Length: 331
Ligand SMILES: NC(=O)c1ccc[n+]([C@@H]2O[C@H](COP(=O)([O-])OP(=O)(O)OC[C@H]3O[C@@H](n4cnc5c(N)ncnc54)[C@H](OP(=O)(O)O)[C@@H]3O)[C@@H](O)[C@H]2O)c1
Image (tube, rainbow, N blue to C red; front, side):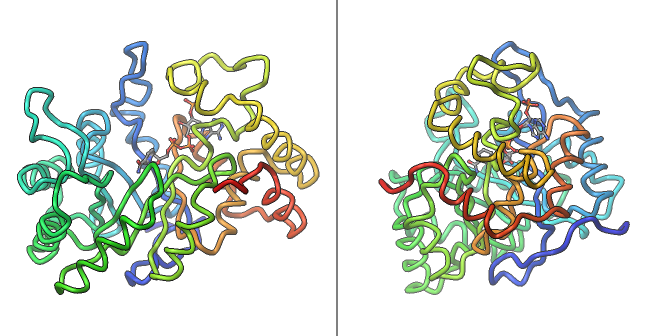
């Protein structure tokens, strides 16, 4: 391993130590709404090379990212590296075969089918973390927890994670209480969305994580790039930005409420002399409830800028100013 730019941080009570920022690979092999794949294999390998050369060890993927290409690119890349140097997480839930109504969710059949495909694409015998990508209310909680526990007993998975879009704390607690009562493996890591314009987890979910010692890895820390400051109220400035390529982006992120929060980020950025990107990422790193935000990057320049957020600082006044941006009182 080369000298690290990262400090390591504890992944909750798992005993694992990971770099302060994980590398997300959602966009590896991902076809955008115009039919282009901005991160093909070569670029993916360059990003992984740079991340690992800076000391990063936490790699996040999912069985559906790039319809399996994300895992495949990582697996091919690992051939030149020592698998033991990385903590790799993947996920199961979303459909993998349009014609098969059982090839989705958390039924036993789908989980068992998928785990071997994931390991094969990743060119490994084990996953460090297997997340349920979403919870599946159509499968009995006992079936899910027993199936997942068996994967841990078989040595195919080391830790279980619970990823979510709508942060329903009760679902995690219900599953873990079931596991505890029946001597099964509980979820020890969660992955909700969290960034300066998406803070719903603060009222119930993060306190739940604190109470139950759950590690928190968070997704979309820059709100898909919105918090870099490259979007303006009058429209996107950069042609190749995600906001020009993904239909959902405008409704989700380019709102006046979010631009007001971005105004606060820009103010702090000017006063601290660091970029809005680094302000936004640093605010997350400073949060003691968060183990490791999972960053996305389309270019090496973006990756390097994002990783620099591990070396900058924010004054307590500025953290408070950012905490107060936006109105989260309704959650
Ligand atoms: N568990 C889940 O359900 C879930 C859901 C979503 C994501 N995730 C995980 O979280 C990871 C990160 O999500 P994300 O990609 O949405 O993260 P993000 O950090 O919020 O957004 C990343 C995007 O922002 C832009 N960007 C990043 N750094 C930049 C910089 N320095 N300057 C300018 N633009 C920059 C790039 O897009 P452009 O350059 O194309 O604009 C980049 O692809 C994913 O890869 C995945 O592993 C998990």
